[in-house]
Length: 446
Ligand SMILES: Cc1cc2nc3c(=O)[nH]c(=O)nc-3n(C[C@H](O)[C@H](O)[C@H](O)COP(=O)(O)OP(=O)(O)OC[C@H]3O[C@@H](n4cnc5c(N)ncnc54)[C@H](O)[C@@H]3O)c2cc1C
Picture 1 (cartoon, rainbow, N blue to C red):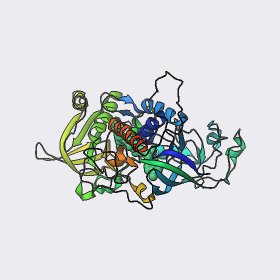
Picture 2: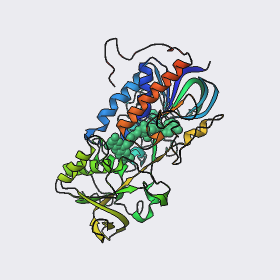
Picture 3: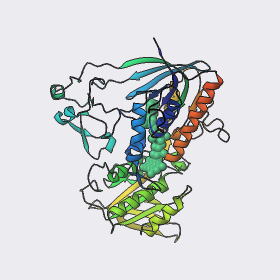
């Protein structure tokens, strides 16, 4: 029999989790599909958050736990929606592909013995290749579900994982599974795609080892970071002099993305503040076109960065070149002096923009979900109701509709869930089954 849910949420980042939790707390049954091995999205990769410098992992882990444990949420990770047919208002047929982990999910206890026993080392995607992981591995320390998986492309089939597994969970014969569901509404929360820094060829990312991008810097600064310090890739030296280059892949018509990514000014200020706090004598410079400190507490945050001695230079970086010792020469047109200046740094961080990640619209087979001119999911009624798409019963939340920070993503996710409830109510659907995560009288831990 086909399993039925009130809503399908596609994407398990902070926005998708929030929408799922609001719906589930209201008593609706939610199917949450996430393509990576764990829920959490980009927030689970971040160091701390602007403008409070609170630890990102500490904020998101209760949400991850609440989502994973909620009795009204069925979570499918390492899975992708393949097809959606809208049959009627309030009736969508959904096909989901569940990829094999080569581990029995019910049997795995997340003990990591397979990981310790595995002899194969490959670059760790979660840490952007800054360190290695094993071919048998858990995606990251606070991953949920905490289930191992085997990367068969790199596995040498030595069988060590199988021999040490205390619950006999390893299963090399596991196959992809296609499952069918029926849902009444859909929320798209597929987030953003980071700009590929290598496309800005004049900055030398991928060619010069000490040019890194901002998500790599997030991992280097995170409490769960791979090394206990920020080390530059070429020689493991602690960099004394670091530059951030803003608007890499944003506000750049030549690269096809004219819009502002909204978070790069603040995340760069945040990274410089965190770096400065860890290394008091570091010489830090941020090259910017305009500082867009538009949110509550943002201007004060930027002022604090300046007060800490971080230098903000208004200018356009034209080129980055490497010296013999892998230092980097940044050539910049200083907008205030009108001069072309050159300065040498130990390391340069490219503040990459947030691009659309809207391939998900291809799964709709008999309705077309529209995109906006920048490739994000179109907010059909952007001024009056920004979480509606052009298809009734399909809603959008978080960065899927455009770049935004975490608080705005969460607000939009709550709004999408509320609109979804309104849609179900109008169609006359009652709550399927009321279950709450906590005993009565306990306020939700969200
Ligand atoms: C370097 C950097 C630093 C940042 N620092 C901050 C900060 O300090 N403070 C702040 O407020 N914001 C910050 N941000 C912005 C923050 O990352 C976003 O606001 C937030 O991640 C948006 O959440 P989301 O759920 O909309 O998207 P995402 O975090 O992108 O999550 C989307 C999820 O959907 C999944 N997905 C995608 N496509 C599919 C599909 N087809 N099927 C199933 N699943 C899919 C993805 O795997 C992912 O888990 C930063 C961004 C960057 C790049």
